[in-house]
Length: 297
Ligand code: GUN
Image 1: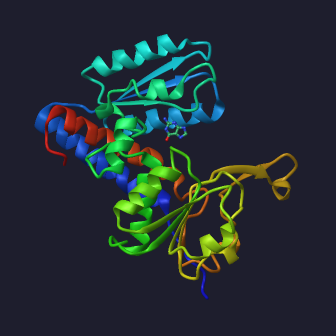
Image 2: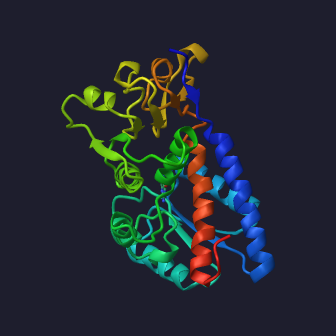
């Protein structure tokens, strides 16, 4: 079998951001409104700092207002909740994102559920997960939405009847991606660390989504020939071949062996990763239009 088609998430995300910029311009000219995204970062986790910086840069590049709030990791839950409340009440802010993870002394669910669900661009509020699960209009988690866009890019818009296996059951990726695929009429299995014969489950998948956070765990012989493989994992591993102490990024899928069997596959980096921020920017425009009562471009 020939090598799988490489799904170019970087190019897809670039196009999506260009479309967001066009939509933002239209909203500004026709309604004199500028969509605004507020991001709260607590503490100084290096990975989170990089994410938040990229979010800020890309938000401004699309013509939107970017508001960034940095709080020390000693911040109290009440102070953080007060900041969320202030942003709920701020008419210039259409999207609110609290960067996760939060320090241990803060109740993550309490903070997320304090966000106005209509401004919850992450789609993590229980009201939004409930709306998603019951087929109501909701804000949708960004990485899962990006995964489904890439699947449709590879397989076409009609996913009905396909078998999807999602490996991983996190609230951020596994559960919502399973829900989105179910809404697309796939037959969905959620597999996880206690699943019996995980390889066998994976081999049944027309669409295989890996979101477990274990480097290169899913091997080529776990993949059904021709399957669409979406790798959400971003794992840093030692790369002695690049020199002493060097690291490189790999996914949850062993790309080289899986690409020999799959029909299409996302690389790491350059697959799902770049999609998250692009989808977040699109979600901010959506939230803005709904809140302001103007048509979505
Ligand atoms: N940390 C890692 N990914 C995410 C995300 O998608 N949203 C938020 N808020 N925090 C994250």
